[in-house]
Every structure is written in C-alpha cells, then in structure tokens.
Image (cartoon, rainbow, N blue to C red; front, side, top):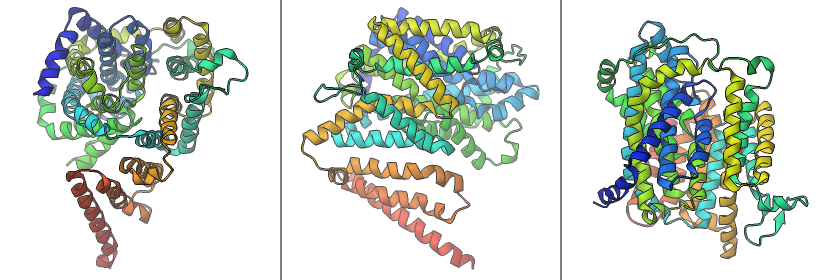
Length: 551
C-alpha cells in the first residue's frame, strides 16, 4: 500500500503539461542522438543537462531520463539500417538486425528492436519500483567502512570491464581518484596539490570534469584532422526511410516472451553492478540467447532472438543503474553519474534514506522511467524520418554547436571562468588518454567516487576503527571479496573452457561469499549463506569426480 501511496504522491508532480512536453522533447533528442553513429547517449544527456538547471528537480530528472531511454532505443536504427551501431549499447543488435534488413525485412527488424526495447524497459520499471525501496532498506545497514568497500568494488569492476586493457583501466580509476583529491582536504580544509594556485583550492567541479573528459575529448577526436571533420555524421552509408511494422513485430516478440524476460532480468542485474552498463549487458544477453537457442546456427544471419535479446537487455540496464543510484547514492553508469550531479546541483543528496526522505522525487523518477518507454514507442517512427536528415550534416558543424552548448551550460553552473578552464584542461587530457588507449569510464567514475571514498575512509579513522573492521563488518568483507574476484574475472572469461582452474571459479566465489552473508543479521541471509556454501561444495565435488568418471 505504501508503494501506491507514494506513486499517488508523485503523479501530480510528474504528470503536468510542461513536464510531459519536456519528456517528449527529451525522448526525441535521445532517439535522434542514439541513432547517430559516434554521438553517444552520455553526450546527449550532457548536452541537455544545462537546460535542467532552471527546472525543478522532478522536471530536470524526468527530462534526462527521457533522453536516456530514447538514446538506448535510438541506437538500433543506425545498427539495423546501416550496420553501424549508433551507440555501444546497440553493438550486438547489428549482428542479426542488419542481416535481416539486408534480406528485405527492415521494417520487421526495426519493429522487433523497438518492441524488445519497450518490454525490457517496462520490466525494468517494475523491478525498479519493487527492488529499489528494499535495497535502500538494506543500505541503511551500511556504515562508512561498508561504503568505502563498495567504492573499491565499483572501481575494480570498472577496471576489469576494460578487458585486455585492465591495467590501463586500473590506472584510469586511480587517476580519477587523484583528480578528486585536488583542492581542500575534506576533514581539515587544508589545500593540497594546488601548486600555489589559489583557485585550485576549490578543487574541480564534477560536471566540468565530466563534460571535458567525456564529451569535449570525443568532439576533439571527431575533428582531429580535416578529412574526418569534413565527413558527414552518418558516414557514406545511404539510408532510406522505412516504415516500422508494429503489429506483426509485436506478435513475433510476444511469442518469444521467455527470451524477453530472461534478457531483461539480465540487463537489470548488469545495471546494478557499478559501472557495468548497457555496453556489457547487450553482448551478454546476445551470448545467452545464442547458447539457449534451439537454432544457434541462425544467429548472425537475421535471427529474431538475436535482435530481441540485446535490445531488451540494454533498456533494462537503465533500470538497474537507477536502482543503485536511488538506493545507495552511487552511479550505476555514466548517465546516472550525470543525474547524480544534477541532483547535487538542486541540493538533493541521494543516499540509502533518499527514497524515504524524498518520496516525491524518488517515485517521480520511477514513473518517469516507466512513461519514457511509452513515449519512445510512439516517437520512434517520427525519429526515423529525422535520422536520415541529421546524418547528412558534416561533423565540424555539429561539433561546433555541441561544444558551444556544453561550454554555455558549464559557465552557467557557477558563473566563473575557472570552470571553463577545467572543461578545456580535462578535454585535452581526455583526448590524450583516448589516443593512448586508456578507457575514459574508469577515470570519470574515479572522479565521481573519489570524494565519497575519502569522506567514508576519514569517518572510519575518526571512529577509531582499525583495519580489521574490513574483515569483521559483513558488508565490507562481502565487497572486498567481490573486488578480488572481479579483478580475476577477465582472465576467467578469456580462459573459460581452456584452463582447468576456470571450472572452480564460480563454486569458489559462492563458497567465499557465503562467509560474509552468514555473518549478516537476521535468519534468512544465514540460511542463504548455507545454501550457497553447500552448492559450491557440491559443484567442486562433481568437478573433481568428473575426470575419474570419464576415465
């Protein structure tokens, strides 16, 4: 009953003519941005961010969520029609979407992608409303040491997801933490790493750093030489407008509801992992759909399930990322990191008590995510017509417009030139890091999480707790152990089925994590811990006996 009461409280704030109009505009912008190859969703959200400063928190966040949802769905248009994914979150969609379009069924391929995105978003919305408040209740158990351990886990996940570039990912995360320490000490207020520059004592505001590292550096890369600057935004691909086959494609998707639900839940799970994001979930969902298919040989040739899985997963990932932001006050991905910055601009601080303290804003976000999926469904055909027109614009023209609005928004934040220099410096830094092959996401997350980590660690020492508290606090131990396994995860993924030790990875993970879960209060969690430990032991026993049985 409390859920419906909070929804009734938030509905009048969200369902106003102005807010709905802003959300429709945001969805349209997101769809168009997602459809344009190279123009990432994060850049679209950053571009919209300055316009939200004059809005109420509900209106601003609803608009950004609409851009987020639209961007996730927009990427399928370019991927299916041209074979070039509009966003990293739609890479796997091209594997079967483009072959289906080439075989003369572009309308069906687009329809399957749109409906899969819609159902993935709706399922994630329901999970968001049900799980986020419960996760927030668990979050109230967290002490400073637990938050610090969670930040460490988030950074190791970010680094491990860099794949073969894990070392560069770790370096990037540490660089982000270093950037976060520049300015005044959070405990004593003493300046550090300022090199005698008075303005540097204020540190670097999060949003200028984010826009510089992520958007400005990308724009510099796009116009790095005259040939690339003069290219059309959509490349040389000739795209024609087609009509989305809504009715038939909806029937096709609903017949494969198991794949839709499985991929959506997988997307939510990946979204909950700090910094994982839809770039990971769409590949994982595609892989799982292929492994569970009765016709795996059809994948890559225009398989329906090959379009459903990645599109359902990437939209559902947004719901998982919002769960982490709402319940724990930590960004699940780059987009929620930007939203976190927007909340701070409006003097709203997400935390485990955020949902209970600010139910109107919290449930407005839930409803906005739900409504944005319906808007995406309705506006997809309109965006499809605009997609062809925008891709004919030359890169240097759009780059100049985007950079102007980014700079204008950053200056409007505090009305000081220092922020403009911050934007420029980190734009150049991001450009150099990209050129050297360093992933940008770990750096951004390091900057976002750095102050949180320092504040929490300072609180640990202020309380007089020793380092042994990392082993005696169940949640802290849980995240420290997860961090160790997450660092080893890329090697496991690469060598799975080749190296013998990979067979023991998952059972050992279950056994090791059972210890901190068993230490947690209550009756249910210790029972779960016993089940985890027994399952892991049985799996190891079966693995050890398997070679003997074969012999």
